[in-house]
Length: 458
Ligand code: NAD
Image (cartoon, rainbow, N blue to C red; front, side, top):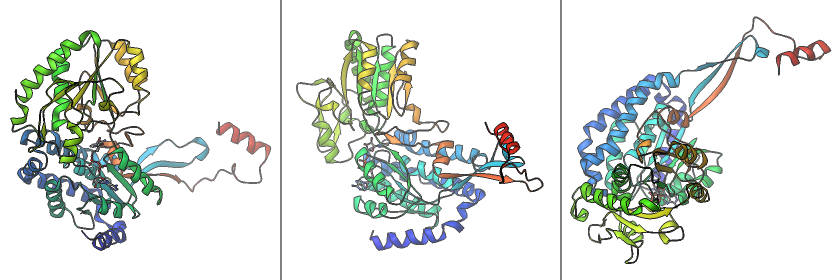
């Protein structure tokens, strides 16, 4: 899309944003209902696009993309009136007589930039939050998942006017062009590298940002864990979407005494869940493109494979693979965005937590254990975005809790109430009554006034 066209739509949206019907809560509810219905109608088309871009099965597409979006819309529609209402708060005695309240208002015109790995969910969930809060939106899905981006464009066009939501198709250049414009909030999901660019560009206009980034999320399994169940859940969380999940366990670190048993169980689970030949499993997703495929398969070598390790250049599939590693291995230097799971060991739990904390704060943190003391310690001592005890990745599948990272893994959060607030500016208002005007704060000051002020303000 040529930049003049993007600029024209941006300017028209901006000119009309204060009178945009999305300012009305009832209209937002109506639009969310329409969006829900249009997604349900387009389900087959969305699944087909996900199949083409990532070879996702219809079940995985519903479970991790369409269903997640529908349940977020349902949650928002149920709670929106209460979220959007002015909230009365206590007024300090010194301000008597007055009424104080917090008034949520739309930020205005927001930019949403999304990645390719959950291309539908990661575009539409933030959009649902932005619409619920009453904003108009420019949405830029990823150029690497073109089939899904085309369906998103169609869906948005069928549901919203251009002044309400507009989809910009295009790559890095369109994105850079958008980032030079003045938005009232930028919501970015993607790599830490591009997140930094987004934040720098936003600073030019003092624009607030939400950054949903990545990182190396550890998965600890200690010797008290239920090994069979841990293996089953780790295989689900790691190899879903062929490992292209921002909250996938990036590396496994188990107590040295259970390493053999855990690896055996994980290998057994890979076969049970993905068959003996995952490369031929029609429901096993593929790597998004040759660049990601090559970067991931290059982590596999003859020396490090414990299980799996095969790949097919023509289909861009890499089988679920376990490799040996230590903290200095190449696989431990950057986030792995594919189906490779490095296996490390520890002997001293407290030392392990210290080592984990020397890394950038991960987006997610998982611990499999039945030792409550260790669980409590790990959750409070380690810094990370969110996580699970005795499971992985499911903490993001709820509208009742915010989802987000910390420092290098992100800034801010969304989903449910926090998502509504992310896209809102909360005005603090004091409505002062006129039937009484206490003289304390006005000059000339006297000893009595000072004494009274000290009585009320402390
Ligand atoms: P990416 O950062 O390369 O791209 C994200 C978006 O930014 C795309 O829309 C792209 O067009 C745009 N972009 C890319 N380069 C740009 C540039 N130089 N200037 C301006 N815009 C640019 O990320 P990706 O490869 O699409 O996604 C993978 C990354 O996203 C991983 O690091 C993963 O951890 C992270 N991620 C995070 C979450 C989360 O919720 N925290 C979810 C999914 C993915």
